[in-house]
Amino acid sequence: MTDRKLAVFPAFHKVAGRRVVVVGGGHEAAAKIRLLAETQAEIAVYAPALDKETGVDLINAHADWRGKAPMLADLTDAALVFAATGSEAGDRAIHDLAKEAGVPINCVDRPELCDFFTPAIVNRAPLAVAVASEGMAPVLSRHVRARIEAMLAPAFGDLAGLAERLRGRAAKRLASMAERRRFWAGFFSGQIAERVFAGRIDEAEAEAARVLEAGPVFGGHVWLVGAGPGAEDLLTLRAQRVLQEADVIVYDRLVPEAVLAQGRRDARRVFVGKAKGAHSTSQDEINAILIREAQNGNRVVRLKSGDPLVFGRAGEEMAALRRAGISFDVVPGVTAALAAAAEAEIPLTLRDTASALVFAAGQDADGETLPGWAGLALSGATVAVYMGKSVGAKVAVQLVEAGLGVATPVAVIENASRPDRRVYAGRLDELAALAGRPELTGPVLIIVGEVVAAGAIAVKPAAIAELAA
Image (cartoon, rainbow, N blue to C red; front, side, top):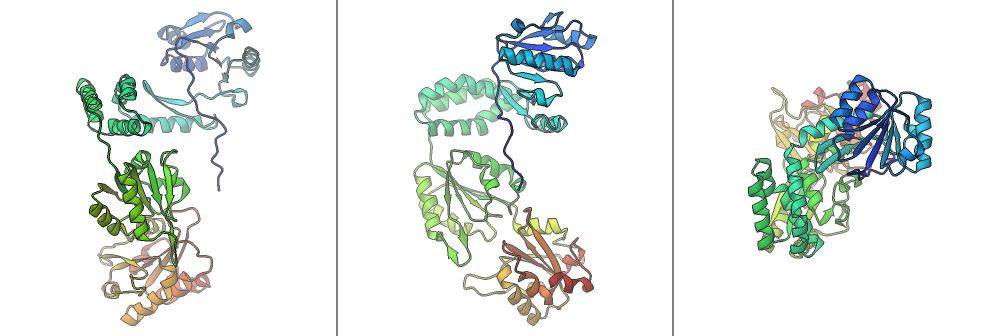
């Protein structure tokens, strides 16, 4: 697994009213001057000469030009130093001078000489988003910045400014950290924010003041959230947002750490994982946890693998929450059948081949396999069987006995969407061998139907025996 620990610690330097030194008079220096011009720093440029571009940027930035190389005293008490002389020897000399002065330095395009790296910045002052790649891929950082620029309307700066004006009032009015967190969550995602984005900032400020004066009413709430099949980038934007708002995250065994990490770092995690034949927490106990946490005023995310409404027992949890008078929302997720089919390029429906799709559990509540959907498979529907590893043989036998042809294409997918996924294809009479392969230890989904033959994993009959061996 890739080590995702950063080699740098992201931080923002305070530069308002402080000197930031740029050494150099060429194109690289001009780029740093333009970047610093977006801050409240006092910019000092040291270079014996300036090219035309740098001179124009220096004037526009109201920077101070010193027509010489800097001395040690020139760097003392500076907040930051940028070396952009255009030569390695020149940058090294400035690097050594900055180190002697005890000032952090960035040498343009020389990461080995940098104390810090210059990120790609999205400026929505006072909100700032910085994107960096540890100096290794600045073009990638700029591409990511462009995407964020498109996501964040300029009014986000107005919203951040309003938040800053209200911060002191909110701190006095709301006694606890939890109350303040809940107020700000509503502030940034509710009617106040909508009025700011509509350009009605005075109305937004008046509404925020009214809410603070009246005292916000906080109650518990539960979100039943689909975490998707495992890949963190298949988590929906709505799921990411509510994970950031949750005080408590109640999660299942199949939810990976990368998805849990999308939640607030200070959110309390409650594991209620269940595995076949070894239920660590009963459904009644899970219902009781959700109700108790919400009644205590917490905002709770019940995080389930896949989609909460597809074999996620969300129906039982919704019924329990309704009886207890607890408000809740359902946040859908990508269910395993969709992810598995997408990776294997299997069209779950196909004109003239399959116009119906069935999601089926490997077993019903009484432990019976194939409780009633054999007829649908016979009529040409694509069938996706969840939790299929232990029932592959029974499914095959019962479908054949019901009249489905032994040559009907099937696919077996383990760990859909994850890096360790496995995908096998074959015929219905080989399903038992495919699903029973000893290396399959994760969640297994079976797809039965003619559409499998149109997928990327379809194999020739001569190769099936070798694949299943």
